[in-house]
Length: 212
Length: 235
Figure 1 (cartoon, each protein chain N blue to C red):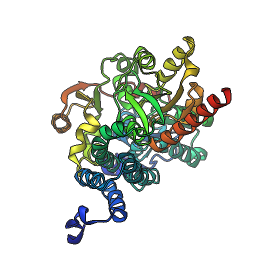
Figure 2: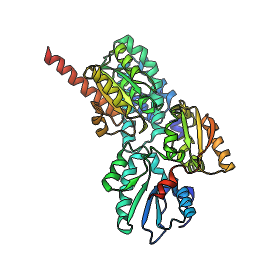
Figure 3: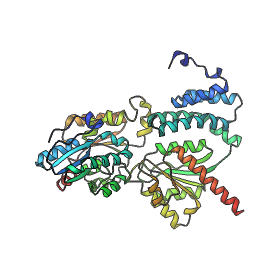
Figure 4: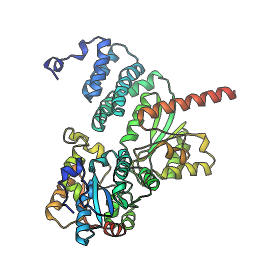
């Protein structure tokens, strides 16, 4: 399968299918492209193909179900099975209802932070309501995905309006990369938050893909 | 902005130009200009309630419409709200003194496990602008805190907000507890927040889901009118 697009492309445009003849298509959020492709290639799962929707849909979650539905309908005829690599992702159950209607499987988790850490482990952090989470993708795309959409590049005075009740930034690291660690730490400083790094690896994602 | 606009002296504008200028300044999130204009109108003998409704709420209504239409985005709305807050801070003590009409009373808070309050704060501000007395109990509220506030404040309306898919079901816990205690029908329950929708509002037993602050105000007014009609009818 072809290597992932750059972060900007994954944020704005997504990623097209690239594995002709595969029997299963994974429709994923662009924020998961690198990780899914790595897992698929590592395991030699040639039956799996991947297409990603633009990661920026996360900033308008109400648009995710319609985009997923369009992708499922577009690709349904070309694959024996389609799975959806999204959690609820702020859709308030709308994505789950859609997947049920279309009879496709999705990830049973509120969002990617949860399944990267492992949903059960993540749910056990009931003392973490003041934590702001980043993944590898979000660290790389912090400016495009967080800072600019919130208008903090233009109006830095709004920072505490958004983050005043947060206390720490938790970087859930999928990979061991000191550079990303440094960037994540800097993100925490920019948001005025304490910093914590948590090495999660890919969490529940490989086992979920393995059953797809 | 042109030099001419930079040099604009608000005090030189007649009322019929100053109010549209306030709409523009609210739209641009210019708090100091709004505060100055509010003081100018007060000095010209405008009633505080008139300034609030005609200038501030009028301006924020335009902001709200453009937000709904995708012309303005959250950062710009927050700046506009901050500007309006500046004007409201001047007017609020005067409104109390001048006996401005009170449409109703609302207790509002974000549910347990959720610290997000941007939407809630916008609703609070717009409700106050529309003449409601608002008691904001803040973020991360357990059911007991809602019940205490209802008992203490005796509002007409309970407003609950949530931003997270994981916290929005807690609204049902609050409504179910109210029902168990036999007080559910004593209040109008309005819910809102990004992941919610009308179906969810119905499913948990709320009176209405409000998709934004402007809808919350209109919905609250409608329910209050119905409530008054019921009382009148019973009399």
